[in-house]
Length: 404
Image (cartoon, rainbow, N blue to C red):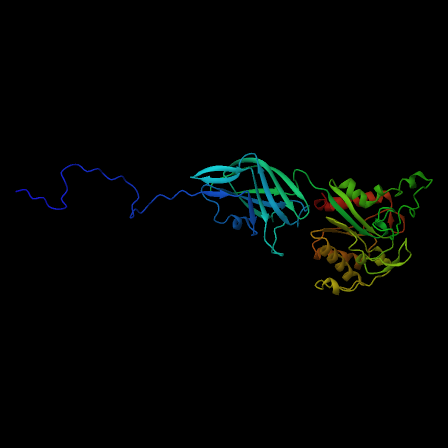
């Protein structure tokens, strides 16, 4: 007798179950994920690694953009945004592991409210860093960098590698086009020329007091500073620099660095006239060149002390060392990121020369020392036109990395 037991398998061949993940499969395939690469990306961190942390995957790419200057033209300018406009889609989505383009431009904007730690153009090899997330590929396009001062463009071909971060260096000494820098001058009679100073109250030495102007002797007439184009500062800005323009000529004949009062030329009324009194007379300078001290030597301004750590309101404006420190601090405080250049006149005696050098070195300022140079004069301490060219050439040759 045949007995069928419950649960017995029938005699026919059964179909094999299709392989696939089961509840106990140790290696299930990863689900496909969609990734969006935004055209607008915020920046809250100082490093590119932090910008891209956890965002560069096997399907995306990162660009570490270094913002540095092999000269000193843009050093210190705060970087507000970096964008790259490519020749094909550089942002968009990755759907089911396939890139779907959504735009040719990617922009990262500084979004932090931190008033202290902010990205700024650095002197090479120091640099600000921006980390841009993008699609993989080889792109040709233009980086546009907006700083607190100017907008710069750099044409670049970039290969963004999937799963990697590629470094791109932008050198602000050589953008596609260098912006024009505004140069301010603060000085005494050596830096004056009538009609160029920022106030009608300021008196000038040149051209009226130059004995060579209109001289019948052709040799002496050739030495006359009879046009602004023959002054040292005009030659630096417009003859030596390639991208310079005058901001303000803040010079007044007979004035000292320390606080003093002189009668204004137009009003005849007592007017604060020292360099420290005129520090805020500039408009919007990128560079300020200081040429002073000759009248402090002539009038024996007290030297005083180096009060490096005192705030602006506590520095002694009546002594030379402290007043020079005050002047630099006032300029740096008022004009963010300004590059100051110190000139040490050939008539400065040893203590005043040493004071200028000490202040320049303390604040990391470039300086040009004319002490010991033979500088031809037309009258008193005032150089001739050929001497002004000599001075301008030395200023530029010494400081050309600061004077685009």
